[in-house]
Length: 216
Image (cartoon, rainbow, N blue to C red; front, side, top):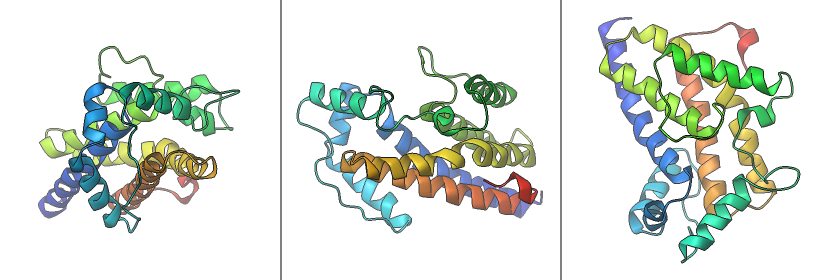
């Protein structure tokens, strides 16, 4: 990869890091600190700027209930509990009807190990949970930005991970959020994520083209 191409990839990595870190923070498990951030003007401005970048409506109504306990309950009801499943499960395996759940999880684990990702201490979610997938994408961009690992190798992994996992199911989760009338802020965040991963995949494919049969 030529120097100019490598510099462009690093610039793209910086932009992606900003967006994916924002989405990871917004969709992470509830904490009082996160609740306060979501209710503040900084979060709303950041959401509007990110939405505008992808041509999405930026305005949402109530971002989070006044009380933290209500906010936590709402998150759990949207993403973690329900019969037979939560309204929107944030798990890649939930949307994969071609492979058994253990195989999907194992593939995620192999990706993470290959690039030295250690998931946060205390993380109890399966490897195919959205929060872990976002953590891995962020990790790849940190490697790319640091320039200590072969850029083409990182991009190949990014392309394969996006098209085999993230880009296959996140748009479906975003559509389900709309269909099931989740709170507007969650619909907006998942729609933003769906556009971001598709754009990410297109740029990565341009950098390292893949066989047509691998496309989602």
